[in-house]
View 1 (cartoon, rainbow, N blue to C red):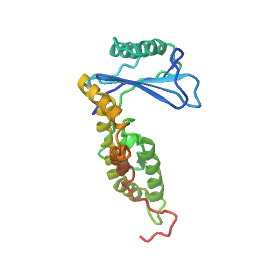
View 2 (cartoon, rainbow, N blue to C red):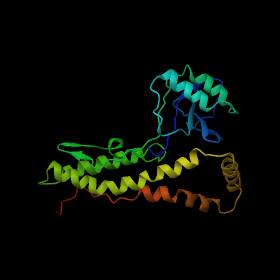
View 3 (cartoon, helix red, strand yellow):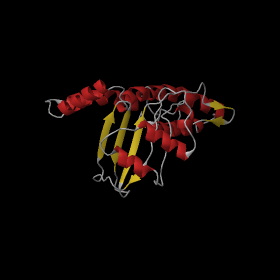
View 4 (cartoon, rainbow, N blue to C red):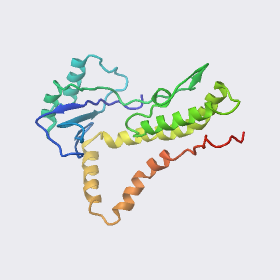
Length: 231
């Protein structure tokens, strides 16, 4: 596990958010997000906080909520009200942000796909893309004329592994921006965000920020498996 965080989704009556908007409160070692969507009534909250990777996550809901409340003790803004609303949330969820690194993705007639093979974690933002691309490549390679499952599995992993590993590298870098370790880092980051909104050429600056994500997301060339196979 390269990073540890916990998140929960909770209905929060006292706190409201505009449709499709997100509010963030950042503190040392912990970040709170409040958002809403057109499908869900009320606001939802997500909590991200740094934890010791060697500490196993509690599986009991009461213990999970106790740990989360302790992690956010003394935090300001709307956090106390969100923590209070967490207890009765019907959709409470708690987990670590983790990655999966496997030496191989297949054995015999079984192949792993998506998060089971190469989870990049929610911090990468690429889990759905990796799963869809992997399913396409796996299905296409298995459908090759005169092929067998072993050949298809090997080709699938050969094509997908560099793509998956590149997208996995996004996770650790993103975690450092999502959960900041010290007050100085929080102050500097918030000041930079405020400044960027007023800087000329901010679109070019944002393009530089998202460039690694774009390159990782397009770091594979997909075959047209419906075309005649050249061998």
